[in-house]
Length: 75
Image (cartoon, helix red, strand yellow):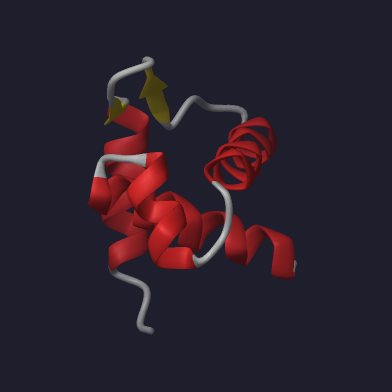
């Protein structure tokens, strides 16, 4: 669905920026909107993609694998 595609794009941008705030600025939406979208994506996939702390965002092992797969999708 369109929502899933957006969530994957948001995930890739956050993974690249290592920041919800930076990714949100690049995407032109709120950081909370990006975070909620990623949470829904994780729920649909049944796997945690990112470790979130107040200061940082990092990929889980599953997140790193998913990120590599996403990067192989032609734009």
